[in-house]
Image (cartoon, rainbow, N blue to C red; front, top):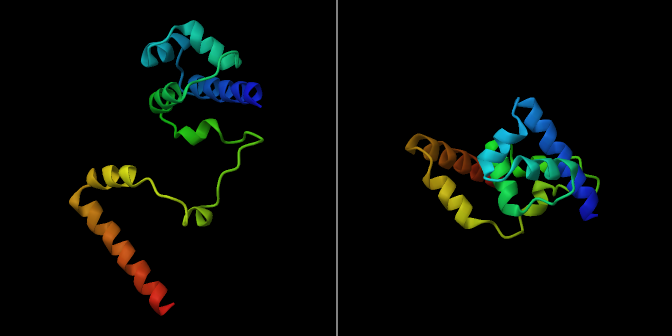
Length: 121
């Protein structure tokens, strides 16, 4: 499975790189590797570490899930199934802290409206 995923990820990387008009050299410089390493990623010869995947995601301006979408063995969880799962509170806290006062107020309003709707159905 790993080898097939490496090929899949490489194709997604190449497709995104080309759609942005970037050379392998430009992507390599952005994540501090050689262009030969980008070639190996794109061919699926080498796997991409989680750290490199995060760097690629940020540089290519795509969510990390972009690289997993359309992979035959990838199962994107249903959001309803995640309700009982542990939340990443650190991520939520950092994200919320970075919002403006207006954005925070809008979120509180949405949550308040949702709670009222659930009570009165």
